[in-house]
Length: 121
Image (spheres, one colour):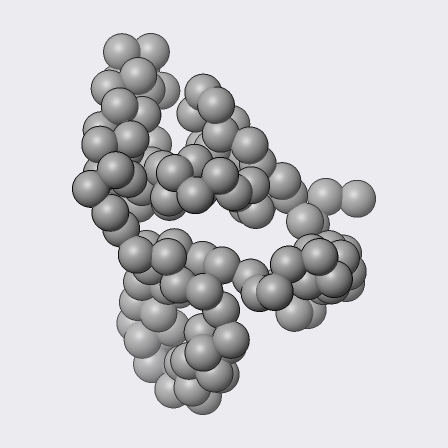
């Protein structure tokens, strides 16, 4: 996001009202695994510094239950998405947060989830 002026602008607006950005522990995992798979040590170090300034939201029993409900709904509609995306959405929903994502095609399938795309014009 730091290379995207629109996302940086949206983050600044958000931070003018809220004390910090928050990410799911699963988002942290997805980013970290990708960087480590590429052996991008300098990017891992930068990401760790960033994470120190973020609120990392852990999974809870309520999120797992919400995630199972989301999975069941998507399965019944034949619109499944990955488990990590489901649990990230459940994390946002259980915390009353807007999920900022550039993957609207997946997350827009989830009933009751509020999303925003900070890269959209």
